[in-house]
Amino acid sequence: MERKNNQQPKLHIRKGDTVKVLAGDDRGKQGKVLEVNRVKRRAVVEGVNMMTKHTKPSAGKPEGGITKEESFIHISNLMLIDPASGNPTRVGRKLNDKGKLQRFSKKTGEIIK
Image 1 (spheres, helix red, strand yellow):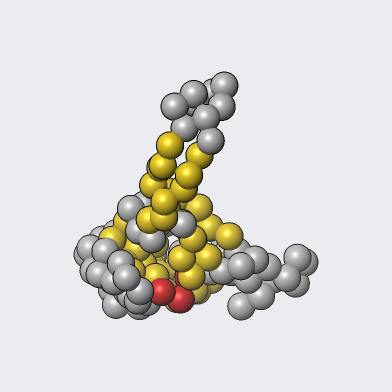
Image 2 (tube, rainbow, N blue to C red):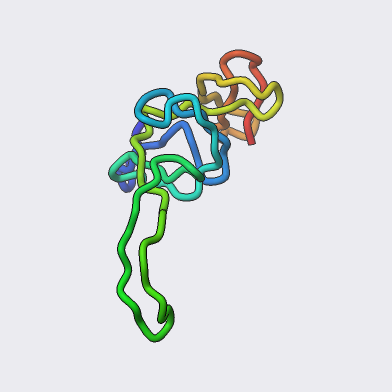
């Protein structure tokens, strides 16, 4: 479902959601979404898709060295964990009584906040 104003896609996950990784080296891991890039359809998940980064010494960080950071992972490889049941679920959207779209769990039918 695309928006008319800015043509950015609506995604099934948001920042702060808990997700499960479906594919890749970190398959089966769970983590919290730290950041979402809607244009590229990618997300950063806590503790998933770790990469090493070499940093030069600077005034703010005089030791420099090698650090591990989370990298982006494609949205299609993530599945939302239902907060109510704790199980992975597909996400749907339906209008509430005020005419606003809300996400809901396809397994339990409960609204996801």
